[in-house]
Image (tube, rainbow, N blue to C red):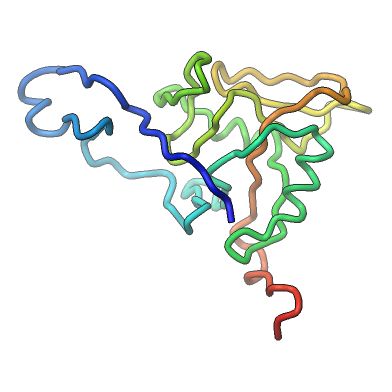
Length: 179
């Protein structure tokens, strides 16, 4: 089970962009931001995951704590949330595909992160499974869309969003239960 605290990306004051627009499609309601109906790229697939309609990938919605690259990789590979697996670290291109200039969300007091609000980041830096050479792994800064490839060091910790190919096999059975 993944637990998280819900954040409302539009918490605070709403700006009136014009009386007609305000009356027809934008309003304030207990800190949430309302928008005109538009096709959504992400659909909630379960309590902890969303499916990307553009790529067919299933993503964990909430990043959790920061981890070393090895810990992040192991965490994804052993994850069976919603009875599904095997999960993995996303490639740097898959991770970059989540970056969205038109969206903002709080990054724990940092510059705002640029990602659809259905995915809760909790911080700006995220590991990918892509290698940049011996001892190097790529990560993405969701504030600016910048990719980094540092040498892995024991204290280097980043957040992780695990991904699952939606065409993956059926849900994983619980250990010890009949197949």
